[in-house]
Image (cartoon, rainbow, N blue to C red):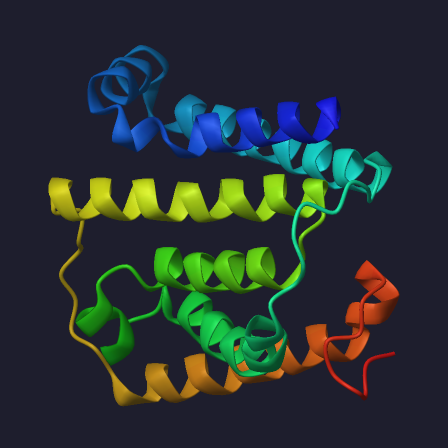
Length: 188
């Protein structure tokens, strides 16, 4: 469990730098854009590897609470919405223009549904951390008015919806193989 927790601290520590604007600005100024982005990418990758390894090695027990039947039932639809939001996050979509922070909303939906649908200690730590991150960063982004101006294009929305839906269905198809849980009857 220690490796999982270390990975979460590394991954979210670097991702929450924009919340600590003075610290982020000092680092950015000292390193320059290229080195800052390089450090950000390297730390993110290290954190992600630690999360994956730590989660795989962590024991499934104890079960902290019973999985929510409602979360299990809505999970497939919620994941399609989540993946569409993630897909639209870096595109010039109407979705992004209206919601402003679709990636954080998508991560929040993904984490909340997975948190409620599990109940194992390691899943509670993992999905609880992602949910907390999404909420903290969303509050910070709204407070900082961190929104870029752009002109949305309907074509970008279509791409985001199709790509997000296709990726969600693909993940659901191989969810049993990848994660040991079949969220839908046709999971492999």
